[in-house]
Image (cartoon, rainbow, N blue to C red; front, side):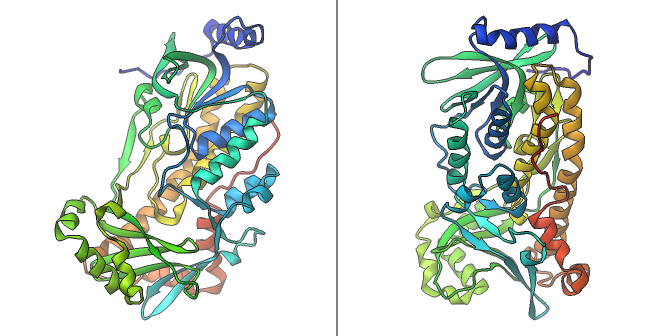
Length: 428
């Protein structure tokens, strides 16, 4: 389906759609909503909850029956905890089972370089590792307490409803039958393989990533370091994430090399791990076969435009992120907060918000692109040379940055707070 994107001022179509949404309370149009959000991930659930708390009628559509997917982004950074604090949900969040990590260590030049979150000057000076399904369920539970928050699970969006070149809602498939939801605003928050984006006609610019990642788990002993640990040696890179009773391991491979690694066998992977971390010993046998390993094909991209009339893309639907720094979930939350801050007032009054969609893009595009370039720099100057067997050290600029006291807080601030952290504000 090819749709030409064209900027046009609000027309009588917008006025009719506004009347349609306002008529919902009289049940004139049974499936009309103010805002329809596609995707129940971090961006979609956070935006839905924020808008509902502001009084906006919102429906979130999630194609799965639950939130239980393993190896999804679960690194919750200080920037997200500030948002949860704004929403008075921080205590409930911190009551979830989680691990706190304040430091990342990287071997370089015979020593260790550290990124220390305790230097960022925040009451939340740590990364909280929380299973994403627990985090999403926290947001969903808060939303269910609001009469204007509607969450439909097992509802898969198949197409957009377009009227007079304006997105007016979505078509969906569900166990109880197919249907349509019409909305004043449709938000695509359905991940890096976004169906909404595909049908919107909005093009994507792909950035080259030199790596893919294998994810798996190994037992962690209580006396081992709590820090996130990067291990590098000629041809091999792995990052160990502290998850309490186990290490979540990201084993980095050259882009497209997964078939070669599979061909070398699981024993070769175990031996590579022992070269990186000899202290693992017999624990590498916990990787019994390839069913214990999940391949993440790393992608980094961003859409050329985040919106068209009646539609906004946020989170991974607008920009897929590399796993470096674990920033993806947190950027998605920042997108949701900015969207709420800019659009909630107009949506609350039932006004078309097309003129405001470009403001969301202007607010969030620059920090997104800066973050992607920061990730690309690390991939090209640190990871790629190591995988090629050329270099096991850190670039000179990075060593100076991390060893100069007055500059040491900047890497932690970039990771922990991002280039433009958002805070929840009242609708205008």
